[in-house]
Image (cartoon, rainbow, N blue to C red):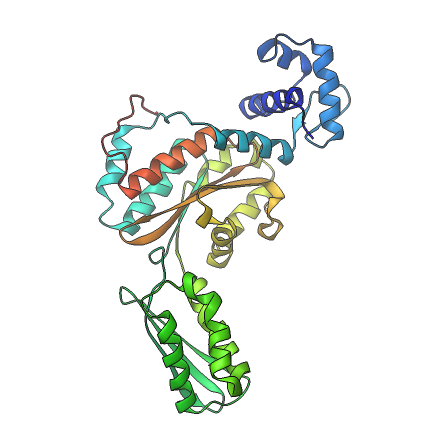
Length: 346
């Protein structure tokens, strides 16, 4: 459990290390941040924090470096307080605002803008509108145990998939399944009905319970794992970062960006439904990016769900990255149209 004194040291070490990239000593913390505390006292507190795995010492007599655990404390502190308005060129923001009519073009520009401002990699994903609302459901028998699942969503988007069920169902039974699904789901968001639909349908069509369960699972897959379009910008930026001077680290990022499936997993795993999400290092082992941090958030623009984010080193300037990302998202969503920034980024 961190005491208030420990917390002050952690925040100071992380802040200074993000700025310098050099191990931080107790004298630096005493001189620049905690002047009412002696270097010896701070050194003892740093030793405590090392035992608690918030800091580590690369070699004897060196200063301390924050661990991902310390970065998490720092990021959580940033998210709890009001963040400064970022110094972003109003010309760039005006250009992004002017591109909103073409959502794809706007996201391409947004990723490049994010990369240019932060020196990290801008990423974006574009999907359907935030709520998936069914307009039509059909199950069509194609052959023994083979069924075509046809879903039409609000806005005209169509999903279809041929699936194999555990047992054969007649077209009459499939029509009944379509009818019962429609009774509950049509005109409502899938998130609202998915929890209650399965038990209702299984009870109503008990004879075909296994096949109903399988058909609904396929529906859920089509509606919750919808394909995104992906965009990236500023991949060359990481070439100049000392954190990625190691070729292996650089290859990990480039491999991720080359595969839509990997970026799709990144988008889904970052829990964008909860708002702004920051994943630090190996907090999500599935991503296999222990040397990277990801800042992501979502909005709705042009009636479609857009996820926008940044990929950078664990030693990311989180406060600035979060503020810039929020500014870009607000512009994409059409918020704060009259707010202007006084500073330019060169």
